[in-house]
Length: 146
Figure (cartoon, rainbow, N blue to C red):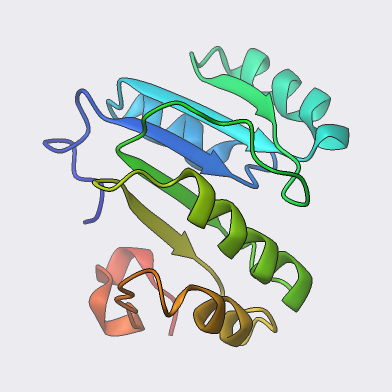
């Protein structure tokens, strides 16, 4: 529901911690105008290979969350999926979001329940961002597991 096809055309999206880039590629295939998938430098080669083998026009960049971000593009949305594994990653993600989000941009951070980093992330962003937490009942029945 967050990324309905009617909202995607013309949208510029940055994916943080893309892994193999599935979310970013899906958003591009669903109509986003520009998608940039990022991950730590040592994982970028694998990400690029996956994107190339799927023939999806997304840009791939290295982004080290422990160094000041070099992202200066203007994105409409930032997405991150299953990156709140631990306190270290959660706090680093919060710092990256603080430095790259433009005033009108929205961040969507999805994670499995019970991840260790969730409370640390929420504390780290509490004074800067408005947070809406979605619960299982908020998802379409085809896209949730109870």
